[in-house]
Length: 404
Image 1 (cartoon, rainbow, N blue to C red):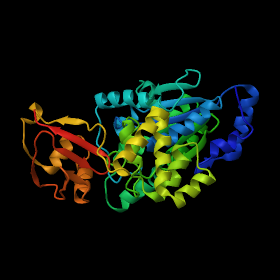
Image 2: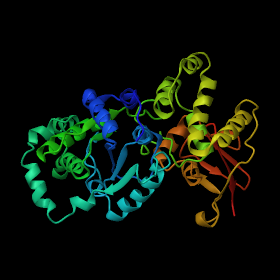
Image 3: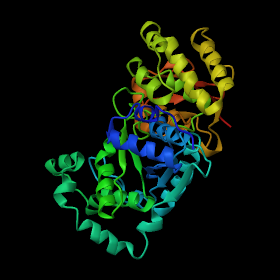
Image 4: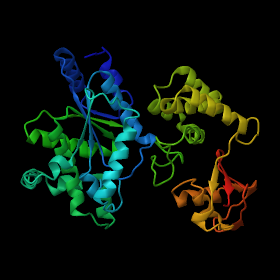
């Protein structure tokens, strides 16, 4: 197994909490001497089908552990997803069906492998339904729960806020951190990674491992990536995200809309890092710094040629003031009964700009939507369309309308 003298420093780069660093360095040293890789756990509840770049902050750190010879335990929470992680939630999550969870889990794994090394020696994919739905689990769970107090659970920030605001907390939500903690027992985790909002749950894993006579896992948290709105963490529900499955064009274009103030963190968290020259470029020429960022991100998923093609296309549109070389068509035919008159919000939604109608409404009201070059700022406005009309949203979303 390969190792590096600076492995602890590399692995702790960008981490917010490491509990604790000395223990991590010791275990890495012991692993290097014994040749036995550490088991690095990260859990993902497949509550939605898409992975966005916010998720890749964690996945990229997992890949660093893999590259140093350690084994990632990619835990798909197909049972915990049925409850829903209460972290950061102001109300109880809606319950998903088993079918929804299963479909989401499949696409999660496929997308995660765009970042992680799929070598079976470096990764193990497990589903927590294997043990959480076992017949004997009820007895085990009651034994664990008997050692955790309600006060311990209610002290977490999101529960405390909801209690003070007289918002309900479902009993099943109190079980969630205990179930996540027990996952660490089953996979014998040496290290568990999560976002900063996961600290409580990760520490619960240490507590429950101790109860089962295991050496408590090292806990490492990573920053939450702020989304394209520059305010909230990246989230599909808020429409402020860049998806791993976005096309090279969309990935490049969305990155070009990243607020200048976020560029340093995007370089740090989504690329190999930022150097002095890039930091200087951000300050002196933010436009070209953003192009560099967009190219680096697209290159990771589509290769250098695609990144360079998207840069050239971007320059065509914005520097040379030309239309895109190839505007994709959207057919508004049989499915929509050959409609010629549309409410603008519904037209943009049908053109598949976003699955979030609230995001579409915001774009319209911001004046980011034009039809045949005419800006329309009322989401409820009725517009007449014909084949060949061009719908534009933001800087890079173009669709040529076709009425079949």
